[in-house]
Length: 285
Image 1 (cartoon, rainbow, N blue to C red):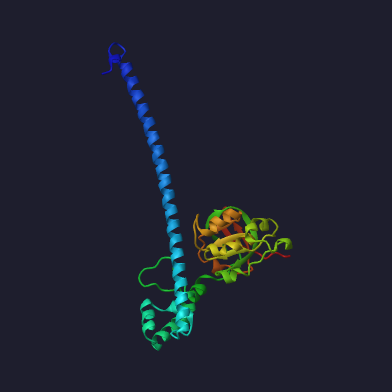
Image 2: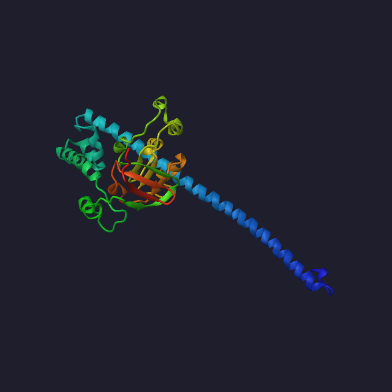
């Protein structure tokens, strides 16, 4: 099969053949690994994009449902079947069907009661991990046992955006509370749209350090006017982490209890490299 193997140099020729074939196999293997790596990258990217696309579809579907039910609520009010169009969101589908056939006061009463207690239930907080029937956290007992004031309190979290800043804390657990965030912006830029938010940041003095439970897209307009971000939940690719890196803000996430242990007006140090949030003495001036 290999005529050059005959003669005194057959051993060397055989070794040369083996080395050549091994080298060729290695090249093919590297090529295969390269294609496999590309396939893995493409498939992973497609998977991530499919998740985002699926999430986008769900958001759009729920928005269409919401608009449809709101329209239905208005029609039911115009026909005298509901006293308030918002009550349609506190009815089950079966109850809506019954109301379209009858005018049941008991169904209206149940919906009104649900609407009344909704703000209370909406403020309940639950542990991240639960077993059995979910039970809300008793915040009064927790604060009495755990959250006493500590002058030099230091908490640690996951550093997701580097940088070090000092400033006054703004504890905000809702967008309504976030509206109180303060930053001194150059008057020329007060009417500038959010598209120029990075320019606004350049002309703004360091703002407050936002301490919150978590953030989503609704919090984005506040990032240009803060000097740092701390969240109780989150990871490397959570909303707060990604947007903080975009604006170059120090940020740490995964600091459970931060909104309870710190208060608005505390003077704090935020180290986005070491993952530290520390209460400091109030500045003299």
